[in-house]
Image (cartoon, rainbow, N blue to C red):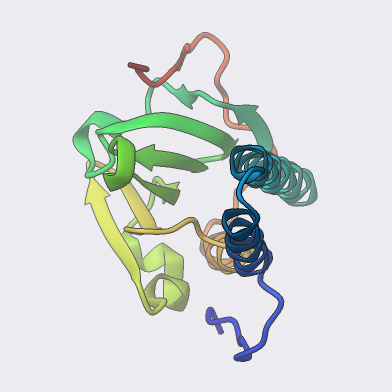
Length: 194
């Protein structure tokens, strides 16, 4: 259910751009001259693609939050969430956080430089069994800290289908899942930046 089918000649934009970049660089090296212009153009296209994908993901998560009656809070976490006691305590970038009654999901980046990796975390103030069968995805990990249970993939961002499955299982086990987490009077915490 969580795997996506890909064909050998599938249209993956990253591979297409990389192929085009290699061809253009090869042609510019052979023609002696335009290499740096082409290289800068290629990097600009890759950067634009990155920001486009990031914007699309944010739009999808916002729409998901609206559809499920959750609240999109952006790049901060509720102070009562114990991120410092989890394996994600080294997260230096929190984005697309969504809260609901005793449920929280967000994207984060662990580590710096080439060793960094993105991760989506779906957390609930419930026992691990509240996530039902959905927590047994092929590369999903379940972690418990205090009264919170976290489900995530260690090395990738969960796609919207996986998030929907996890939240759907939670909503079956949480009869009082409501539109907002009461954050009045509590402050949001922002990740440290270096």
